[in-house]
Length: 223
Image (cartoon, rainbow, N blue to C red; front, side, top):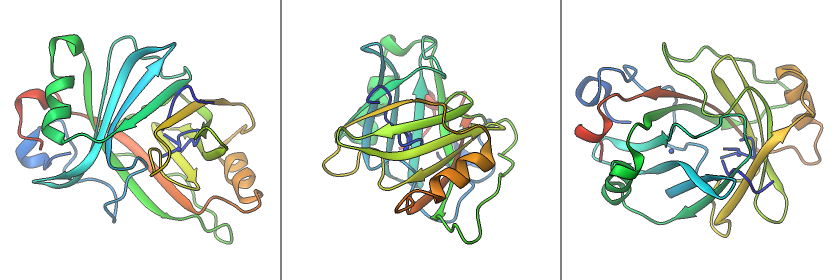
């Protein structure tokens, strides 16, 4: 997946927004990395604020191309800064119309690539190589996500990939606001895995995520 971000993004303090690459955007990867239709954020639109100002947005839901997760960030978005994430119910077309408006001119549009599974501490996960050209949305290092009551997601970012350990998704029912903040308790990827596996109980879900830029998002068929 600490209320200054929302997503664990997996950071949980994350810590947990595509089209068909061949038809939608030449900059997108040939296919999404992942075996299940379940990214780190829950269904709906997710508005990201930093210092009370909207700097990014994400959307997840069903489209004509299957379940998709889209992200958009303004030039003012700071990858290393804490963020607050507010989740609402919104259709793909309505969300797209809003983030393709004049207020988002000059923004970067991306599609999430992800894998999801159960965190198995008996056989700890390793790092992966993202699709060519893909990057992380969060800045490097550790992150924690809080749903207003407790930390529910932890994230570590390295090598253009976000690794999330989560108890529930960002924006899960009952959690309309998430805060995600930098967390200094993880000194490396192995430290991150060891730390979350030492929690009692450990987070149940493991995600990896990277993001591929869609140069023609607003003019292509994405919903």
